[in-house]
Image 1: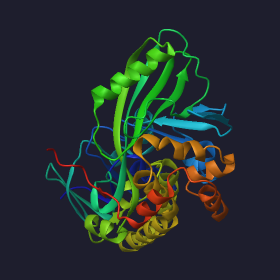
Image 2: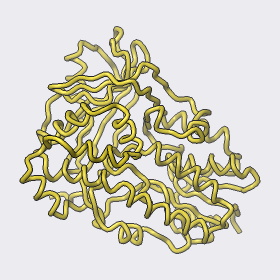
Image 3: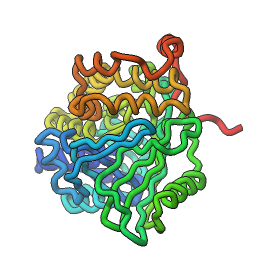
Length: 394
């Protein structure tokens, strides 16, 4: 017969896990299943956000997680501009995410190591052959490359390091772009985890989704050597995230939708298209879904689909900027776009990362001397952009 639940959530990453937690808190009598193909929730990842990115309700949802918090602001570094900003920063390791979900969700909701082979409006079939029945099914699996979208890629490798002596970094460094720019916008991201522990991530806004772990490890080693840090690796993570600049969103969702199944999370288009920051969007979407959870499968599917369409329309400005970044800026000069951006007023910067830019913010960002040649900008705006698909091996 298989097990039966009121709601089955497929995909136990950030979006799926937070949605399960939000529903559990809002409707403790609803039975839940959080189905994840891997052995733990959240995969191998670190999520970070600015303190003011979250609403009061969002901060309350995140409060139980064991996160790292910094109260000394943050900074950015560019060849012609270094700046300290006041916004405080937060970061959550997926291992702590997994631990808390296992503690707060009912034992029967925990379905890790359970790969789904088939979805339907009334449930899911697992690779084991078991059929999970549900009144509503929410698909929060990972985003996938799609020819219906255009853009580039954010490629990164991060290492949690222990240094032989104190590293001297006092606050998060969101971007250190004083490093070489090898055919992409490259920056180093630094999170001081303790006096002798630091998270160092080598990140690229690149045209290709290619990730070369050995090369990035070598570059992190060189960066640490230049800083005088003798360090060894405690943990490592990698990632390749889409940076969306345009496309046919309706066709994209239609290519992934299963009739009657709620399509949410990054797979459903709930991302910041330029920064790839997912925490603020994931939190607010989890709260919204929890508030509508009693609608049932059909009503919840329409509700989330409408939210996805509104989110796509609301984030068009960021896709425009991404198009300028990838299609107008010379790869080695892309850092100039961010260098100029970080000269703008700090409240504008904060709203930008939270995807809440005002009309005045947008005018301010686009005004003044552009950081890319006008002719290339015009060509970029008229062009279609590169499809967001992985390149086939030669």
